[in-house]
Amino acid sequence: MEDRTGDVARLILDSKKIVVFVGAGLSTESGIPDFRSPGGVWDKYDPEDFYFQNFLSSESSREKYWQMATEMYDAMKDARPNAGHIAIAELEKLGKLDCLITQNIDGLHSKAGNSEEKVLELHGTAMHVACLTCQKRYERASIQERVSSGDKAPRCDSCGGLLKPATISFGQSMPERETAEAYRRSAACDLFIVIGSSLVVHPAAQMPVVAKRAGAKLVIVNRDETACDDIADIIVNGQAGQVMEAILESVRRIKDREA
Ligand code: NAD
Image (cartoon, rainbow, N blue to C red; front, side, top):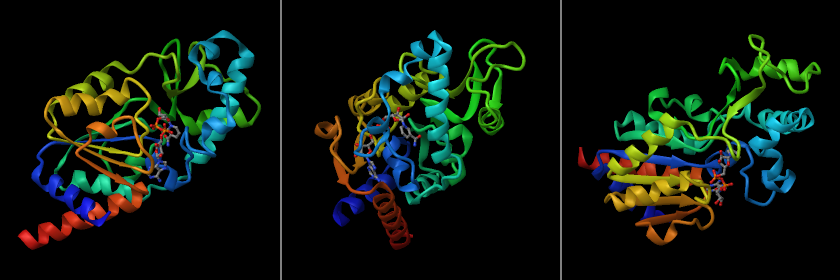
């Protein structure tokens, strides 16, 4: 692993515009389960219960959705960023980060110190709630208080519309600005680093392919194999936090040596 983390560090120092693309695997070391690993979210829930169409269709589906969403939020709300999040924030401080495309909804990038304008949240955020009718946004904590005092499927104070965590469910449209920007930045970077994603959820999983076709180097840091391993320049299999910490350590060492 050491050789490869050194090679990634070299690539980072030789790059001007880095796009980092992350998935649920980045946050498992912060105690938030991913979807597909054993013990992950899909071992516990039926993916169909997360379909947007079901949320719209009946009050009982909405109540079930809020119940699952509350359990997931409970695992996220007090989570702390791990070494992987901190390493990505350090890339920003080094002036190397063009943007961070995240599939995560846990709000840990801002807790780690990445600035808001660098982060593209492709699947929204669980830290807010939005009205599906008038788009009014609420802090998640305030709506959770209502849920825990018995409001099983809360509605908007202003218009009575359905309230839903501001995340993108299956069957719900992707956010236009973030998606367009993510494609644009992927096509314009010189290094694309994937961390903690199985790369099977589309359209997010196309970004590494877009970057690679446009001439960027592709690095994948993941515990298990991914759908894009065959096109990667460097693959480091391991725990994201540990690997990213080693990579940044190597970046600092090379910088000091060459200063
Ligand atoms: P995924 O569950 O499909 O894949 C996670 C990948 O991370 C797996 O390949 C696994 O091998 C790897 N992994 C797990 N722990 C790791 C670790 N410590 N170090 C390195 N690799 C590790 O997740 P995905 O690709 O992000 O896509 C699924 C969807 O899950 C996304 O849409 C995302 O919105 C949603 N999700 C987000 C969170 C979160 O916000 N933290 C949690 C669960 C699911």
